[in-house]
Image 1 (cartoon, rainbow, N blue to C red):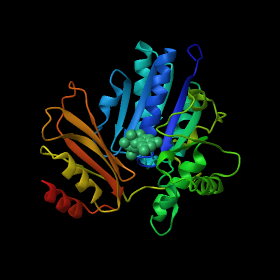
Image 2 (cartoon, rainbow, N blue to C red):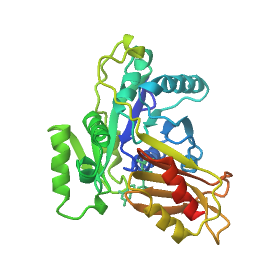
Image 3 (tube, helix red, strand yellow):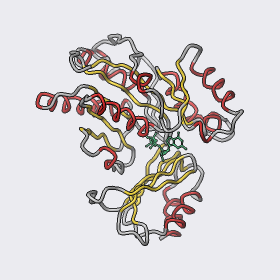
Image 4 (cartoon, rainbow, N blue to C red):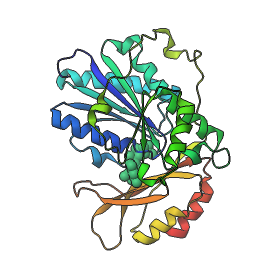
Length: 321
Ligand SMILES: Nc1nc2c(ncn2[C@@H]2O[C@H](COP(=O)(O)OP(=O)(O)OP(=O)(O)O)[C@@H](O)[C@H]2O)c(=O)[nH]1
């Protein structure tokens, strides 16, 4: 990969909490083994990247508080331009772009395939990570909104590789039904691979699956050629001034949040420990991990969901603190 003129780009797409960052970390591990210098563009909802400690020593460019959607395409271009400038000093071998859980990967594809970047970057694959444990729920008209269903459809259809992740959380016998549903949405012939914590042969992840097609120059500000969905009801709420928390009580508190809170993450102090912890709340599961002592930051909690009512969240928050 090192001697190719264009920088190979892999886009990671997928709904909130499906496992994009987990897969990205696996891909970065592979880059390290191969001696490739990666660049990473991270798009986060919620004004704060609470996962920066996962990318220590990596070249990360952050796009905060967005969904790489039409409104943020200009920001993405700006970030790519900044990255290209830095590449003159420190060349990159490969670029990863992780969209937010509510990004439509087509928007990212459009930017990369525009004449501005086509001779610099080679879009290799859009890897769409799907949460097997929630796929049926998110596609059900009874338990999900049209917005979520449409967004997941877009992500599924646009993916050049579908990674059916979190299969460990799916009761045996249900997996076939989930795969059939996905195939119905994605169409026959799409490559779909099962995974648990993104563990699979890296060769599958790194395969080139997109033939670059020049999209043209004019669309920079012209969005008329395909429908855009503004994921307006998706919100991120940031809770600051977080006191030291009791782990069990916090965990219970997260699980009692209104059901439209689909994702939570952040950095907290846990009673009885002097170190900071990162927490992840996804698929109704909560996990904690110690963050490096070098991370010097204030505790913060980010909650993401559809149509969140700030008052309701703040009332719930008051019950905890
Ligand atoms: N049980 C289980 N948990 C997983 C698996 N893959 C990832 N996770 C966990 O799910 C949580 C969310 O994973 P992430 O990789 O952060 O998901 P993401 O898609 O980047 O999430 P967003 O930040 O919302 O976009 C973390 O706690 C992961 O450790 C899996 O295959 N099985």
